[in-house]
Image (cartoon, rainbow, N blue to C red; front, side, top):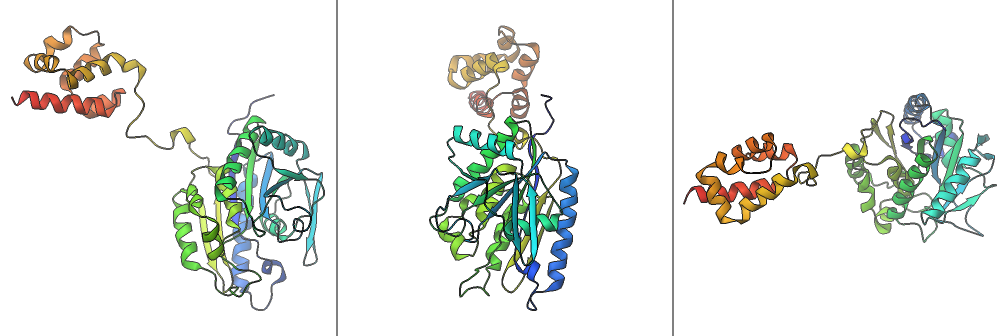
Length: 358
């Protein structure tokens, strides 16, 4: 097997799946719908340009497939085809069956006992995004229980997304995630015409910075009272994507639904290089220097010798010449850049300054 570069989830999109996009009732703003379609078409083109091996779709069921006999928190479709229909439109997508089966096995090994199906139909929550994105597959459809209590916690959704990403990496696969749902809306309730726009703006402000883990702060009550129970699908996608700033973000409110779109297609920085900590690990290459700094911070005799004659003190030490010169100067920034923990250089310098004033 030839190892590919940049495997796992390499891009994605989160977008709405309002049935009005297909039914287009008189109450729907056609300009808004057309704008969302244009955005989706452009995002689909960008995601297809990434040339993924599989599209991992994350969508919820609206009490159509999973309601009477079994309501799994998560279910993967491993049949050959995903079929469905809505508003006189037929859906049919090829499923990456073998790859999905291997993902299921991997998830079992990681402690995720996801359900699976070979016959469940897909509905508009999947058909609308794929139609607008103009993506045919192959897909790896994941159903998330958003509407029938008890639903999975957001923490579990995020962790599942992380695990699926690891499963794709293990298979040497490049994937794109397509998560549908949201934002605020209350279908079938007396609050249908009262989406929570201010809350949605607050969430998007966090996601725009790349803080996708912000979704983990949403508990069951918060998601329910703000009309955002479908954000569980976004939570799975967030786990796959990691802390990445979206390359585009759009919010188009309507009288019944806040339509939001986020997309990622640019190459992401390494997760290991995502930030530089103020307190890094102690470099093994600077062990001797670390020991000396600790002595200077804690041994008064060593401090007095150092203050009396810095050069004479360091000449007798088992240090590299670069380390000796840095120790004579004893500047915090230089020490940290060399791989010294900032506490050690700071404490040594602090006590030496005090010794010098005696």
